[in-house]
Length: 94
Image (cartoon, rainbow, N blue to C red):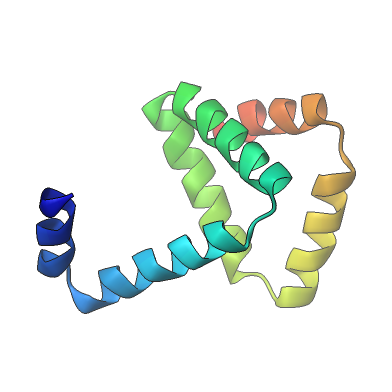
């Protein structure tokens, strides 16, 4: 615990704020959302470094879209069955 505290103090303020935001987002999640986030993380870790980089680039492009377009894509994404989501990730992340 002391090691984490020391690490925290050494982080730049912008990084500490980002960490605070992620903790708050995690705490706001329902148990089902947390379970899905863990499953997504496990799937992400199974990707090759190249696949992870491509997926990260895709996400960065997504973040640049207007909010309305992001919302439309998210609705479409959530309407896909999990198997189709995995296929998309493998195709666009790999």
